[in-house]
Length: 95
Image (cartoon, rainbow, N blue to C red; front, top):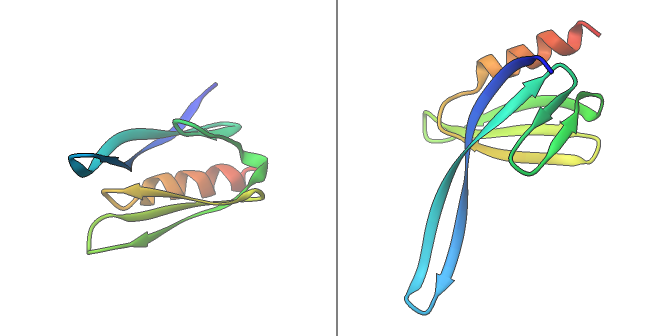
């Protein structure tokens, strides 16, 4: 499997206990290979990925959207993922 691009993202876990509510931020990595995009808990074959888009929030980071045949999956990113999106579009256009 040949790595084409990677994109850091984060997930926020909300933990509620008797002491109160706590938010834990987990740093993760998304990998794009020749035939699939892989996250911590999902693998998306490129045949089912229709598009990748980004919406900026608060001037720097924002939300990365994977538009698939199984729905839209959202990932929080700290920096605009333009290189990841461009790598996806360049790779898919080869097919």
